[in-house]
Length: 332
Image 1 (cartoon, helix red, strand yellow):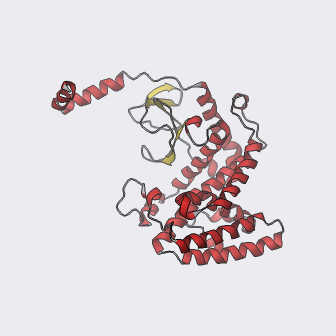
Image 2 (cartoon, helix red, strand yellow):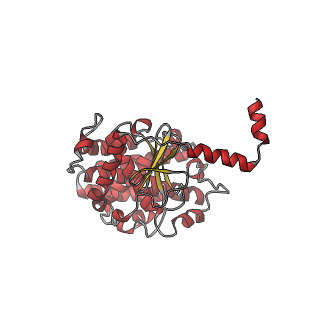
Image 3 (cartoon, helix red, strand yellow):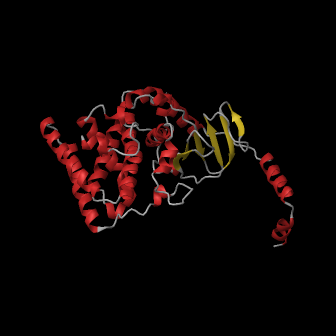
């Protein structure tokens, strides 16, 4: 108690001095061997698959902040903030700020956007190979965020309603539990799954056209803001999941670094690629708007990307010409 009372009486400059002294005493631990191998493989993988998956993706910077139990490690970032200490070539460390299960991409220190992610064991990926392709998912967000005027365009959507933190992207009050909307979504979901499963090209095109027509009806029943929000999420998160799948498929024939392949939790890229697609399609079949709410956009948007690969193979060329919506591909 006395210590707390004393601290409240200390001048601000002295508190700042104490904070500086605390940072000066910070001795950054070394990045673990396992984490170093995983991160190195991520940067090895990018030039192997990026151009196969998305036009000009290879040019996108990929700064990364790894969040461990006590320390955050920053790499591939040109000018690290002052609270980071250099621990190795192109590697900086500071005491942990973010949660260890973090998995997000945003301009944490100002542009460019940084991938902020926990160690594989602390994230939903759990293992090295899935974690690697989650990084490719997040790296695609870096490509999205790097588009000219991207953040200004996000503001112009008018969906934040005063929220300056960006949490509106997760917490927007979309009417997920509205019964008629839930029913319409289920019907649309089933049409999408049916089209994706069709092997015959002529039948596929007919089913894809029917899906496009019903999709237009579904979106036209939404309010303007609800439509913008769902379109934004499918465009951003759904297509990032699609890219995660396509990155794994592009890497199926790529030989990883022997040290990465020697990790105890390694899974062959070809095996993961097949599972990534099938798991997403299984997730899509079960997608429940009322129960899952925003989570449905990952499998649903990925399904739309996979549909467009067959329906309009050059669709990726126009993806950034009209931000935050896939509507043009289904209206024409």
